[in-house]
Amino acid sequence: MKKIISVLLCFLMVISLSVTAFAENNALAESLSAKSAVLMEMTSGEILFSKNPDEKLPPASITKIMTLLLVTEALDSEKITLEETVTASKNASSKGGSQIWLKEGEQMTVHELIKATAIASANDACTALGEHIAGGEAEFVAMMNNRAKELGMNNTNFENCSGLDDTAENHYSTARDVAIMSCELMKHERIKEYTTTWMDSLRGGETQLVNTNKLVRFYEGTTGVKTGTTSKAGYCVSASANRNGMELVAVVLGSDNSTERFEDAKKLLNWGFANYTVYQPTVDPSLITDVSVLYGKENVIVPVTKDIKPILIKKGTEDKITQRVDICIDVEAPVEKGQKLGTVYFEADGETLATCPIISENSVERRNWFFVFCALWSSFAKK
Image (cartoon, rainbow, N blue to C red):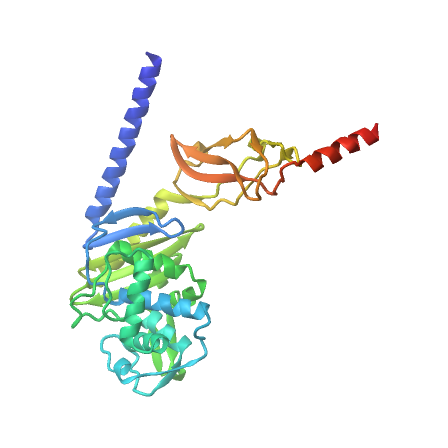
C-alpha cells in the first residue's frame, strides 16, 4: 500500500509540474504581440519556448543573418579577407531601403561592408558582399538556400540576400529556422565585434552607422543579432544575449511596431534567464572501476571518460542530479584504443539529462602462443 501511495504521489507531482509549465508557457505566449516567436538555447539548440514556430512569414532584413553567416564562413576558410577591396556593382548600388548609398564602382573593404550590413542593415552593402563571394546575387542566393538546407531550415526560401520583399513573392522563413541560423552565426566570435557595436562610421566619418538592434544598448548581455522591417513582414528581431555562460536567442516575427518587437524579445530572454541555467557535469572518478582484460597482454584497463558538454537544466534542479554508471566487468582482447567500455548517466527525476562514454585509453593486444611461452619462460627463469 505504501508503494502504491508513493507512486501516486510521484504521478501527481509530475502532473502538477506539467500543468504549471503549460500555464507559464501559455501566459507568456498570450503576452506576446508577435505572430511567431521562438526562444532557443544556443549550445544545445533546444527550444525553450515557441509560438507558431513553423509559420512561414517574410523575414525582412533578418535574411541578412544568412548573408553574414556565408561571409563569415568565407573569411574562416580564407576565401576572402577583411582587408580586400569590393567594388560596388550597378545592382548593389541600386538597392533601396536601408543603405549606405554606394555608388556604382565605389570601393570598400570587406570589413567596412560587414559593418554596414551588421550594424546599419545596409541592403547595398550586403548585396555587394554576396556578389563578391559568388560572382552574382543569384549565385549567392543559391548558396544561401543550400546552406539553409544543410542546417535543417526546412521551411525557408530566400530570393535575395537583403530581405527586401516588395517584388519577392516566395521569400519566407520561420521563427524556428531563424533561430537555427542565428545560433550558427553566433558560433563565430568574430561576428560579435559587429553585432555588439552601437555606433560606428564609414568614409572617414561622413557616413554614420547606428545599430538597428536597440537591445545592444539597453539590454544587459546582448550579443546580437539582427532586426528586420518591411510592410509585409512587420517588425522582426533575432536577439541574442549571454548571461552567466548561457547564451539564448529570441526570435520575434511579425510585430506591429518596433517597441513591441523589442519588448517581446526582452520578455523571452528574461523568462529564459529566470528559469534555466547551464550545468557542467563532472564524473565522480570513484565510480569508475578498472576493467579486467581476458586473454590480453595486459590484465587490466584503467578506463577514462571523455569531456562532457554543458547541459541546459531548469534552475533549482542542480542538487537533484545524480550519476549512474554502467560499466563492463571484463572485456576480451584485443581491445582498441577508444573502445567503449560503459556509460555514465546523469539523471534527475527519472530523466536522463546527459550521458558520458567510458572508454579505453590504450589498446591491448591479444595474447599469442609466443607471448605465453615467453611469460612462462620468464617466470621459470626467476625461480
